[in-house]
Length: 420
Image (cartoon, rainbow, N blue to C red):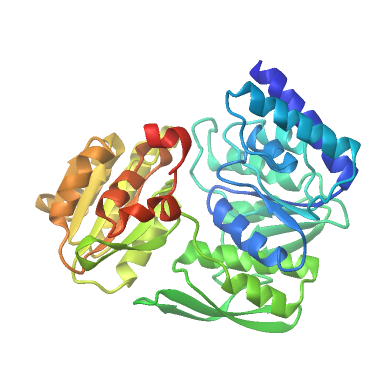
């Protein structure tokens, strides 16, 4: 039944796309897909009627649901019937359909991108980077990069491939691309990159930067901190250049950007503390970036709460040990870990010289909640990060000053997630 429904969704999505012919912006990569999607949507929706992937709708079910403009029917027969009726009406009649679709295209195993490309063919393909997340079914990052790089395989001469120049593995995917190529990055040496970067590391937190698009200089200030957000915003500028969006609209879109829940989101915590909530997911490069941000923000008492990085395959042990080494160099007052991988993080930190007496290890997020409260002092700065399956947002909810705002500020605050 699942395969039948999957095939039906794919078929309906193809027919809808063939009828309405929207410009399709496809986004893939090992990190930053959602932030990049949100930044791009903010910019393109200033000029065009646009729709983006919601929640984690980036796979064989989520992508067609976005194309059809529907939420997940889950196991409800009535919702499935309503979805099919809606799709049929879209195909048989003329409706006001989005001019642009901004779609996350996730890859977990070989063949995933091929399947998604059988449903949608991007006009603008974006590769945010290749790292060591989702390595469970790939032998190395090269194989993973080849799979994700397929997003550009169907581009034609009038299409555009936008690739992160800060990531060497991603840059390899330029070879053989038939469309126009635009590189972006935050470290320079790219077609589009920021300058005059200034971070406000105290309230009100934010980042100012300048960027040149088609010869026009834009000066923007956004309410976000961290390399991942800046990279996402520069990717959006590359899309703006590809679509020739006017300068004033680009600026408006950039300045309306805000972090999605669980992505380096600054939240007020108990005891007048500050929480960096980065609990949506985790892999080595983003953890290291989050620790760099933690090190930069001034505070006399810093705590990192780090959970397992899942689906890393045969590089898991070494990756967790390296995160421990990075944590030891992050200027921490205390280190808290969650899960079996967390214990390896703790071992790596101790081996790198971090005082073992300042480390606490727990098996689950629930176990860590109360002890973290007791550790926190007035003015603490707390980073909380881990893979989705570790449910680290439960810890954030426990120590945030306004837990009633969890549905607004935290990830996974809906449906079955709340029952787990």
